[in-house]
Length: 207
Image (cartoon, rainbow, N blue to C red; front, side, top):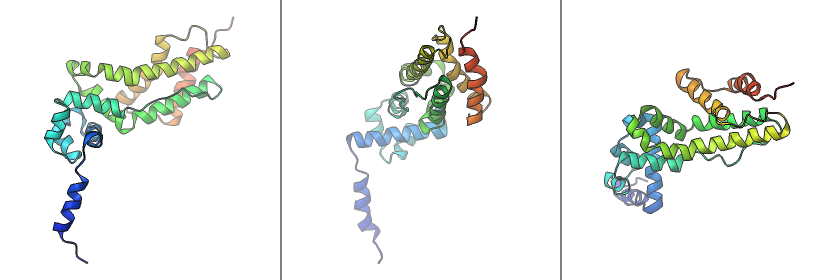
């Protein structure tokens, strides 16, 4: 049986008649896809509209600028870390937290976020500071604080380790090695970082 293109067209058109939250979700997903593939500099409102299979006007009605669109796309797409792992030791907790961070870094939202961090100029980056801090930095530091504080209570971690420099060590190392050394952070790399950097840093001093 041959299907006429004239009979197929109405069904296809109907499938693309999205409104409200459904259309907005499609546009935000398309923005994340563009960020993760062509980066901040390559992202265009026209490209996002094409990816979402909608008109450019539908994008501009909701987001008057590229910055506004990307900020909302990041808010909607960034991974959520609900609770810190509790596996019985600070080593295992930190390893599991690092695995979760690795998964987030190499996800589509992770690539999108890195394109914003690495490609935006200082003025543009300021626009996303709150999004990144509230969506990534603050939750990550909160989980590290919980793991390390729990380790202090168990006697595994020195009592003065719950400070900003210690909390920054893992995110800073992972971002640096990822950007400068193209590290993909396999399991061995994560274990070596925890065993050779974090555990000696956290270990209680013996009198």
